[in-house]
Image 1: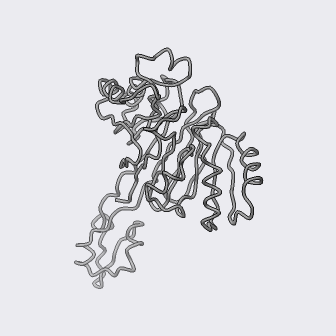
Image 2: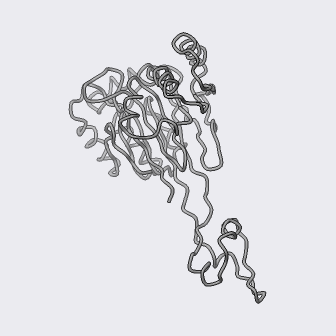
Image 3: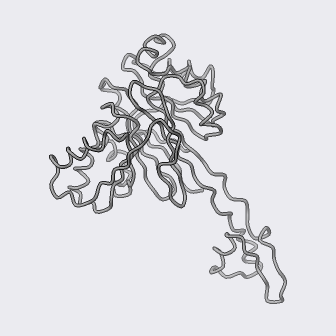
Amino acid sequence: MEPFKVHILGCGSALPTLRHYASSQVVEVRDKVLMLDCAEGTQMQLRRCRVRFTKLSHVFITHLHGDHCFGLIGMISTFGLLGRTATLHIHAPQELGPMLQSQIDFFTHDLGYEIEFHPVDTTKNAIVYEDRSVTVETIPLQHRMPTCGYLIREKQGLPHIRREMMDFYQIPTSQVNNIKNGADWTTADGDVVPNARLVKQADPPRSYAYCTDTRYIPTLHELLKGVNTLYHESTYGEDRLQSAEKYCHSTARQAALVAKEAGVGKLLLGHYSSRYEDENVLLEEAKKVFENTYLTNEMAIFDV
């Protein structure tokens, strides 16, 4: 099965602490590397996680609070110093476009590669990136400014070859792609071997949803049905429900409710308030509602 991994670069919230970096993740899916949010310090964390800078192709920004985008211009500048030549695609609310261009013009000279900005409508559930193997779609969220999450889905892959059948019928390697795409095989004696005997069912496509920052949305689960892995912010516990409501964030219990109602495979908690010295209190709260819940932490890697 092709890799589909989430690398946690930062899982804290706006106030800096010595324990957590602010929000950023790298997703390895198939043969590509995507970034979700790019807070201050992201490029240092990217070095630590040992994902190759050159493979990062698309950055998806949820909203324009600094703890989700302050690291962008630093990373862009560093890529130029490293001699990058491949275009870097930035997907973000449209207001970031002119601000980012001003920073690029002021802080970088002869960058050496192109930045292509793609404005995102945070109010719509829509596909904002697609290639032969994955799609990325927006998830409208409710925060103190226009915000969306992102849902990364694999496309259905091709079936697996039954190697023993290929050997038995002496089918040449040159025919593998044809058979994966549905072709039968005709033997030298003219007998037709149906495709179903030559292949095994393809792996089911996987999906990862990234939802931060947002107040609890009772209907959010409708966009997340059957997602394999869900990251949902859990800034507070129920002990600070009033703060969650005031600042348009969610509690760990509310994150677990979304996961339970959506029927996801597992839930990742993050975007912790600096008020909590031990996030296990948030984990215990969520697990009472949705058992398959995990705390994120810097440099943790989760398989989707």
